[in-house]
Length: 624
Image: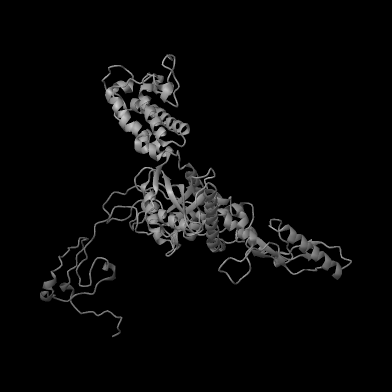
């Protein structure tokens, strides 16, 4: 018997029970442990092919699963609304379905899930027309280049003159028709190598470069010299907060070619070292100039020994957080400007990068919080200022940040033990903190409303409006008294302190309408005691203040002492500020893009901005 034939056992018809009903009795499956005790009485017929979907191999009927209602995603045939259900086994009502419309392939590709997309990132390249350079590369050899090229005029005229002379020698009777064949063109960044050909006689000169070459990048010993415009472009990118991709977009909009992004990045990286060296030398030159100035003023200046000067310093973060107490930045710069001359020369600079390469000078420890970078940079800048054309800071003006002062003091103590730096306050930042103290002070309802004997509740809007006007008036008055006392007594500190002290206690009397001492002790209000028509337009509601005894104590101890206390007066006696340093912050933000993964280029951009502030730019002193 063949292997594929069914095996049949002879039996009588009486031994087979035939059921004409459609109902099939479902037998329960025996437990796994009872399979050994099961015996089959009588013969078993082979399973009919028509019942394979309802009967198991052992002759037992299969369990019928209940029908599933239609859901999106089930393996159920989608039926339209006008078709009937022809399946008697499904004992559910025929639901009505929405009709499906056909969509194109592009819409399907947009709806494709990223997990099933074979393109990384879910992006698929689409067909695009060829660019200008691609169309030229596929042009026939007889085609000529378009007019959108950047040539050096002198080199181009020399090439035309050389071609004309050679053509007249080879073909004297030919009327020259000069063209530049595209087949002979070779692109080199922003420059080109071009050949000139006569269309009539076919005379062609070998191609030559139409751009001016620059100097070799330090560290590169092989290969052609970089084009001057390529180096200038890489250097110009350090002056604006854009990258190579943005520059490519701008140049392609006017159909001009650029070096590839990788070439431009490598060129910028190669120029980073020389540019940083040039910027550091510019800072050393400024320190040398300041040493000469101090010598002309009578200070003792010896070669190789530091000179004590006053300076201002303030840090700038690339992405400061103004709503919290923690900086969410990755790059920090610390410029230092001298406060001895009117020029306010920059004499030191430090830069910290959270993502710098390992071992780089600007590499800030990744485990340390970025908010402590100012102290770390203060020590580095102090060491930098001590190395060449040495300077030491005898006075440091800050915005009240103690980290910068601690960094400079610690490094100075290691360089010159026993040398003490005086910490001075910025007059502008002190006024800002004084205005904030007005909003924190607790005033009476009588003062806030201007109504005598009023003890009711005052709304927050009324209080905020009152404090806004009063804070501006007090900050302006205190700054005016401080400046007037310094200008009246430029060299006598004792008289300066006495004048500020007298003006401080007269401010509240003046704001209350008592001008008895204003003419004698104030440098701002010159009202006389008989001046009864004075209208205080600078005060809230343009009226004098109705001060209680508690209000006088609060204004004197909380608000006025924030700027005119004995300690504050001493720290502000030279009327210095950090405005010149904060002007560098804008240059730094223009130079540094909002990128987090800059490594060497970030330091290059930062020092480029410093060099621009020190000597006016680097366009004429580039390595190329």
